[in-house]
Image (cartoon, rainbow, N blue to C red):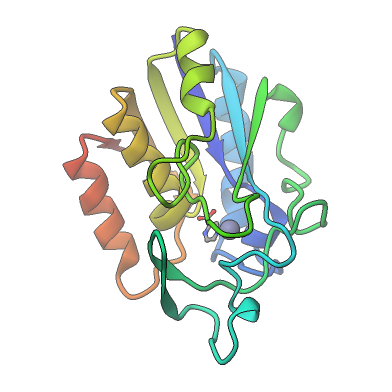
Length: 197
Ligand code: VGL
Ligand code: ZN
């Protein structure tokens, strides 16, 4: 059984949002069409407390997009985004969210970010998605969404490492592309055994 995993198609990652991904809104209609024929649909939602430690605003003297060392490793500092309950954290208004059987929220612990839908950025704290998929008998995943080089790539790589058969449909993803992060993410996904189309 297969599932479509739709990563973080939220207002803050679309043009006009706090952490806008260029053309982030242009993938919505294609994702809706793909959902129509999917066997199972899961949405992920970036979901941060207002004082989340991945926000540059929480670190004196740090600007957004700078890199700091966290106890779990290097972390990019972001503009405040996807604050729990905010309009920015809501899904894009045109996304057919009713089609999803599961919405998994991530990044809700102040001290740790979570790009991946499977593990937080310490690469050990699980979100629970693996158990959900396995207990439903899902072995094959197609991933789309935002952003290619962060949450999509981290999710795809973790899924491949867990043994899922993973395809990322690049035409239904858009990237932030910080200092070559898109090319690096594509190479890392291929190395992990992810199929890119
Ligand atoms: C994301 C940066 C911070 C993403 C989430 O969805 O790719 N990127 N939080
Ligand atoms: Zn985030």
